[in-house]
Image (cartoon, rainbow, N blue to C red; front, top):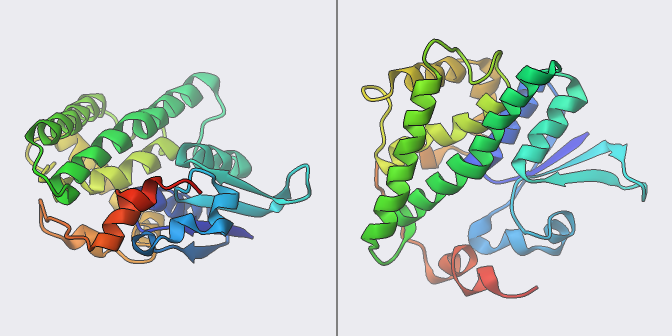
Length: 239
């Protein structure tokens, strides 16, 4: 049995989609980061970086005879693909093409778009430079993907963990008023192609999907405690 410690974010949905695609049995352990669940000792024992998701595979034991636990979504996706022998090519050239697009997401798309979301939707003080900087980088990444997906159905060969990693973040773009339909037709067609997969439909709204129904540029008004857990003193207090 696999435990998925998670929250309803693009990073969380990468893993629930992968688990559904692979047909693995798993149990969801939800967290509410607005009340500080990410600082619970039981999570810190699994991930000292107090970030979600975390995967625990009770069918595989480590050298201490404990269930193996993995954090960081890139590592989790590679682990699941190798466990099942699916969603990651075995042929070396194609394998590393898929891995490089996976790294493009975890090192670029997620961090840059995440900052764009912060300065558009959460920041309490308007910061024009930061907002423009991260929105422009998100747009640049869309152009990279748009060009790469010309005459391609997926990012590298067959559908893979690279596509799974990118898809939930591309799904969030309308929340920062970036729309694919007219400006990025290749990326839009890739997005719709993946959206129609039954496993994606099952995994994309794990826990709940309310955030994806918000209007563009919706400003998230957080109370003081929630702000502190997410961005303020509680986030940075030593533990």
